[in-house]
Length: 247
Length: 318
Image (cartoon, rainbow over all chains, first blue to last red; front, top):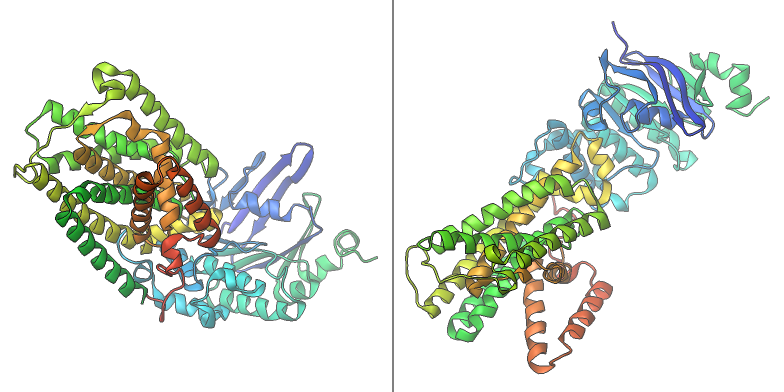
């Protein structure tokens, strides 16, 4: 069985700065991968390359065995790869419900010009998604009025509405108060489990990583320095020194 | 509440237009101009919904106007309704072709590229005297309307009624479009184009659709304008005319289709009123009005009246 995501010698350089250095990577369906690394290690750049936002200098990317190296984000999304962002990417002048309606209609790929958006979208599916991530009470509030934690949830919910095979989340708990981080991750993971979505998330909080990941990959200077079960990677001396900042 | 308010305003406005226009003959032409400008501003509003401002959309009015003039020269027997539809169709096709190119750009580049194209058209029309009549333009004879030959007064009355029907119908259609998936996605370009792409949607295609709709609306406006004025000149596509459309769109606001017509009414009243009573300073009055609107009511007159709120009503279904 081919990997859900596979990269071969994936590289990207910005001038003299090598953000991705010949990365060979595989992600199997069902895994919960946590990516850790210091700021500037190339974690987000790698996500940007895999999701088509940045084009690699060299190397290839495969989703479900299909070569997607030259595809743009839109086409990669259609192959079942959803994404949430470090800074939530929302439609700030739309309500929570409308954001999800746009996502669900976008998934169908047909934008009607006459029927209202709400009539075109599957409201049951939207209600269920809001219930899953705990946004039901905020359905009719503008996205711009949400606090950061709920913005993150909405960002994830929009990606989930696409019914992806894989959800890539870039720092889902950053900017969220530490006492709310676990609630947020619990809500997200509950939704992912229900829909059997493979996940890959960038995270700095070791507690979150150990609690929710089945595999950890540590990024250092555009390379994967360690990759494996959480206890093994987090105990790696290089990871401890370079990523976790402990002796 | 908002919907009822809009309906009431449309009914009152339509009755006022018909009543005043038909009882005061000198008001017919200004009333048709208001509706024509409103339709053009509605086209600009469509672009504003997507966060883009075009400073060259008058070119589509110009294209439609010259289509009417050229067609009538070639086929003098053509009915006015056929000429209007033909003008609108050609402007829409032009919008479709030009749109493929301009929707690659955003913000100031989008605005200036449209302006540049409109000025190329203006220059061509002004220089190609043998074909376009140069800066003198081309005269348009009064055609039949729906097969009926009218005298001047009847012709203007028929055009007024036709323009009013077109304005209400287009306003309704555009408002439906704003609330549709395509229209809401267009509004999504304004706040987060990247997210649209990550939902599997093409922001460029969405903007192109909006651009073509806006060209069609401005084209309809231009065809009506040409018929009521009986003359087309390159001035129809000049950048100042585009600026007036943008002015009206901002004045009326982009939160609801009705804003474009509110803006057109206020614009025309100020322009004609000031030109009559404060000769020489009407531009200053318009400028002051725009400053007041931007500072006090950035969502325009329609926004000030709380028409077209972005928050969904009870139950979320709209």
